[in-house]
Length: 442
Image (cartoon, rainbow, N blue to C red):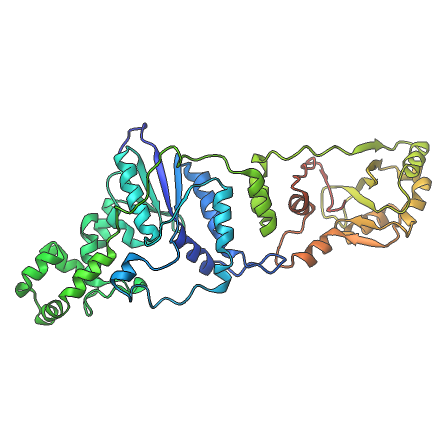
């Protein structure tokens, strides 16, 4: 912003509807395990989180288009009429995007008859008058008409800022006269006709010479070449209508509430539940430190140091209950790493067996060979190889949680134990010591 007054707060206004489309068409068709397409939600959320994380705004609002006809469509029925219907894969994600905004505790605004642009324009000017600096988050060039010394445009996809100098560089005029150029050149994306035959360069040249559409039409006899003059005379009404359609309504019925728009902590439980449902594990990991989950009771851990303690552990386990198995390996490739020990857990009882397993192997041999117990491991192949290197065999049946997670979530790349724990129970696993790499086993 042009000001250096640190007392001015910064309000970010997000063009929500535009970024839904942008995310949907920019990202591959991601799906969760239930078949719900999630790419638009994911792209939308990452954009919001990036802004919150990197820009640290004082306030933030997301503006959405409301369903139903707009005032512009009542004025010109062909307005945006060429656009195809929203794809089913996108429309199914809209409720989740609204849930995401609510879970992030970000205010959202929408109003029947008005577009998101109008709500943003109104809030931007009201916030500026209230003493705030404003950042409009959009990739829409039409928004340049709103730029002032205290209102700028930011496109997070391109990481591009636009203020008055950028507006003049692009259109050759100050922001207030962008609508004059838009009225002449039209906007194919919104089906705003403009003056057919006049493109951006000619429109910029004409407005630079005459200042406004009204003045241009008043002095149309001065226009050269004759072909352009004839177009303007024949399509004068189109030019005026197109300027009106391109003009953002800065008097739409939306209220500026500085306190309500201030950034607040997310509703963590709602956010966690939503991210699990959508299977956004990476985002869940990122946001987990801010969560306040219920304390997970620590499992009772016994360090086995002799044969009697091994016998007591085996006898304490419920008959036939699944047996979780994890090896502790040294650094290096898991197929060649040294075994530092292993852990067994069943029925709430957990024990760690240090490296010298032969001292107390007899009491657990029967346990490891018990075919009534399912051996639950993460990365079965690596675990069986590790046991093989110390002369220990483990009988089935087996449940490989890594393979199971792949079958449930084939589109996800990360099937680590940390990811599974985060998604299934919202628990972040502790990090291993640098000198000891835990295999992906449990």
